[in-house]
Image (cartoon, rainbow, N blue to C red; front, side, top):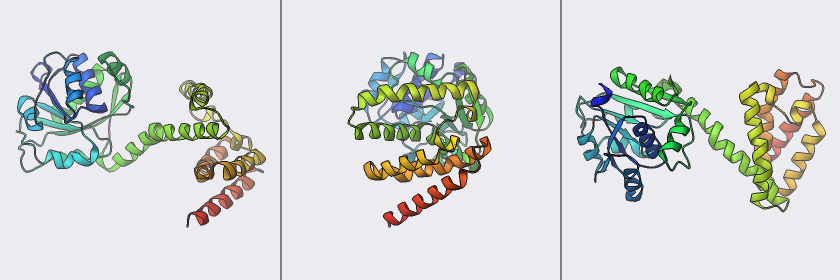
Length: 301
């Protein structure tokens, strides 16, 4: 299907729907209809995308477009799709990185043109077309589709100066877990670091002033040098006493963080071994990890 003939609609205008609709429209694609339970979000979108209008149901989005993006929470995608009647000339796409596109097939539809289009990017805090395009440019999109829809997804990414990888159904959970490690759990780790500053008596604002430059420099090092040359920390120096002091302090002051700290320490061991950390100190670190995790496990029982 040619771009000039393609009318795109969105069902669900949350972070994902808003960002994609803005970015595609700004890249020259025709986003013509949208529907969301949140009327304020659709009205906001309407003010930023010319010739797009709000409709009252998801089926109306289908009726007025060729390609429908179903950008609603993962748990609701399959059930919602079952109630849409889509003809064989149309296509429907979800933007979940963890679900197969097969969940979009249903007995009410003649189409089997389904797809998955997931940006490997956080979409929080986007409030303009320029921000949407900036956030979605130069990234990786995970895709899965067939025929003209697959080609179109590649075109969407190229229009944003981004790339695509085709992620098979059997590895989608690994792909999505990778994204959670990269973004969601990164936030969790920084939240834990802030928690320690608060425990020392400082405000969150002061904590962020200290933490963000360190985190940003670390990511900058990774971008410039790669992951392994950027690692730092006591485990990579073989500093057993420092690690012991960390665990002892956490046990007293923030016991809820001990298991997380120790599990991350354990996950760092293979890296330390690969980098050639002082081999004579590694058994002591391994024993400390084992003892701490066993103690935490007993406390949790």
